[in-house]
Image (cartoon, rainbow, N blue to C red):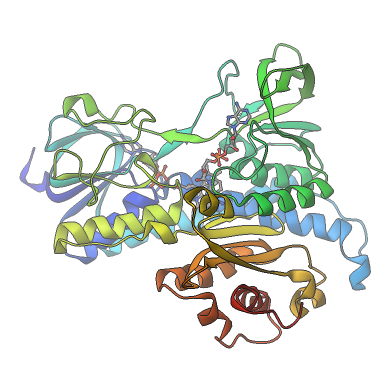
Amino acid sequence: ASQSDDHDLVIIGGGVAGYVAAIKAGQEGLKTACIEKRGTLGGTCLNVGCIPSKSLLNNSHLYHQILHDTKKRGIEVGEVKLNLDQMLKAKDTSVEGLTKGVEYLLKKNGVDYVKGTGSFVNENEVKVNLIDGGERTLRGKNIIIATGSESTPFPGLTIDEERIITSTGALSLKQVPKKMVVIGGGIIGLEMASVWSRLGAEVTVVEFLGQIGGPGMDAEISKATQKILAKQGIKFLTNTKVTSGDTSASTIALNVEAAKGGKEQKLDADVVLVAIGRRPYTSGLGLENIGIEADDKGRLVIDQEYRTKLPHIRVIGDVTFGPMLAHKAEEEAVAAIEYITKGHGHVNYAAIPSVMYTHPEVSWVGQTEEDLKKAGIKYNKGSFPFSANSRAKTNLETDGIVKFLSDAETDRILGVHILGPNAGEMIAEATLAIEYGASSEDVARTCHAHPTLAEAFKEAAMATYSKAIHF
Ligand code: FAD
Ligand code: NAI
């Protein structure tokens, strides 16, 4: 390698984990390269994940609301038409603006952005097959692997991203399918089911477990969410598995049966979305050349400071342990750089919020009631319905509740679960409370502006250590 290809830090992957690490490293004065093979920065999240999905969720919600929820508000509208092409363009515009913005930030912080696929030659060198042709070999004193994750395939159904799709195909369908079956009622399944059902598809979600929302959603909240989504027109088959599918005819035929075995039934669909989880992505990375280990789920094994058994090689984001969330990846990126430059970093894994961007939204942080029962922890529970909140009432958006769980002895907040309007924004307050070890009384005694949805949060806290005023 030439002199100029020596770096303090080489990052493989320009997703949220990789690009945030690159910016932070640039700020800390490390000579840094960031290798990305996609051709744009931002990874899954910005290109085919968080951002495009939220664009479609927002605009499909507006469309659905204009169709079904204006009369009682005193708004009479004329003919409403869907222009799917334009809705997809609006999504692309948001994505493009943000990925270009990240490229600008890398430049501003002096990061060498290398477009191509990186592969380990040995413990210190990464060879890059450049997108524009040719090769470059980068040497790194430190190396960070941030190669992310990919959709888990469903055996027997080959993804073509047109009829059998992953979330990536679900973000670019050229027309609204008549019938859509979603395999997996986790977050991806429910967000995409919402989009296409609002735009007119007849959507059936097939979920293996008895409850929807994926791992981590509180059972009481999950049940209430399913009821609301069903009212919006999404059909649910829980405790059910897809056993096989036939794609040879113009309509796809799926065989499903009870999860524990039982009578088969048939479902037909124009489009099938496979959303049964995501798995770490390391193919083509040349890990065999450096002997780094993965666990049985393919996650790269690291210690508390994100180090592999080769201490100058660290791993962050979806490709290692923990929830596959963009903000988790971002926290790890900053901490990993601080470990390199300062020797200490901080991520509180007990205070990472989750948000599902359906309507209404669902959000949570900390432990569920089921977690606490299983761990034998005694807790107090307080909840407050949005139907008793003044702002929710004025907005005619009263579905949902805020639920607090606090330690029975100390009143320290152990978990907060919200189903309701703006739940995704409101969970930040719960996360801050947990981060600072607050009690439900601490939150309840904090003045909240009136009339706001956040008052439902305060009153749920009141109901946990004492009584709510308005319910
Ligand atoms: P990624 O974003 O996957 O980035 C890894 C990058 O590495 C990729 O760009 C890949 O091209 C590149 N790469 C891989 N191998 C190589 C190589 N050998 N050489 C060079 N480059 C390589 N999370 C949220 O928090 N909120 C959400 O609302 C949300 N919505 C989502 C919606 C969908 C449909 C999906 C699929 C995911 C969503 N997520 C969401 C999850 C989020 O996208 C991920 O947690 C996040 O992208 C993880 O970041 P990462 O950097 O670890 O991995
Ligand atoms: P998931 O793990 O959340 O949900 C998958 C669901 O599929 C589970 O409920 C599981 O029981 C079910 N399932 C598994 N195998 C099945 C089978 N054979 N038949 C029927 N059901 C089956 O995974 P998902 O939804 O694919 O999302 C992957 C990850 O992406 C999430 O865990 C999350 O970290 C991230 N994500 C985050 C979002 C957000 O923060 N808003 C949005 C979208 C994705």
